[in-house]
Amino acid sequence: MSGDAPMRVEARWFHRESVGDGITWITEPYVHPLLRCNVWHVRGRERDLLVDTGLGVAPLRQQVADLAGGPLVAVATHVHYDHVGGLHEFDDVRIHRLERAQMADYRELQWLHRDDFPEAILEALADMGYPIESELLIDALPQADFDVRAYAVRSVDAQALDEGDVIDLGDRHFEVLHLPGHTPGSIGLFEPRTGTLFSGDAVYDGPLLDTLPESDLVAYAATMARLRDLPVRVVHGGHEPSFGQDRLREIIDAYLAARA
Image (cartoon, rainbow, N blue to C red; front, side, top):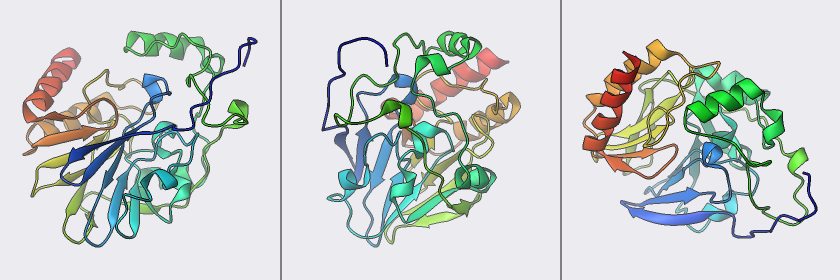
């Protein structure tokens, strides 16, 4: 990091907010919007569910310890570093089969410095709505001795998930939906009883990234068409605030029209 001014320390790294229905929304407010992943905690009768685990620059497990009513299942919606940074902190971890090997030997990009990004990627991200203008993609430190240059995602041997698998919390049951396009192994978790969808980066109310090296525009369009017909009440995405079915269809229709 260049410059003489030290970065401020924010010991309360995470922000937590109850959104009702036994669900807590956890964010990292000091992270650039590109990497500011939503972490979702769901309270269950027999076990709890954690959807995604954030960037991993600060410990997440202690932030959910008081929310947990029992054993916890941590599910990654896809392998990108802003979603799996804290996965290693948990015992029962799961990811789609297509991205399990990547998680077990993690060598994906995991950049916190602007200079690490090739100029072509910076230009593409700016065009997609995520300009990176600051030197770092975090604007504070979780502790004074945090070494930004030493940041790295830990490899994890996660259990493989497939389309149709069910995450059983005892009183709540979330079906695994394979939602490729953003990445080959992107998934969502859908609870038919309540119409609750955790969509990861397949869809959220912000600029959608579908031109990354591993993205697939044809698969993304098929995912969008599938989600448009899903009997959804509320969508909790991988980024940005939650929204309902009407907004979901607006996002999908605008996306499909733009990519037609």
